[in-house]
Image (cartoon, rainbow, N blue to C red; front, side, top):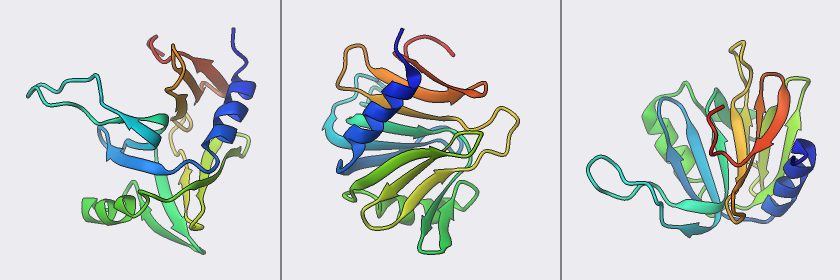
Length: 159
């Protein structure tokens, strides 16, 4: 069994210097940040079109999140869609400076070379819902926070 803390360290280290290639929204306020070279999605939508491309690494946020710059919140998961489009589009091509967890309940902070920060801030009892994925491995390596602890798996099993 893979050690979750070591897997987190490896993916966080690999992400340093990686460019954000694509940012897309999932259901509700879910946000996905694809980093590094993109691969065509194997997912087909109901209309037959191809799903979003996948980066070498992916950052998924399925909880409350915000983008900060300097000492202010620029945009968050509770903002209107127009604010999301402008702010999230501005993250593409920025480089990752660091990825870390903070707090006893492991929130995720992604700091970009531009100085912007992408953070989770869970308000639900279930805690933060975030994942880092190394898609270059077969099977992929997923690291995520669940039920009060850091976990890892291949992302193929239901959680």
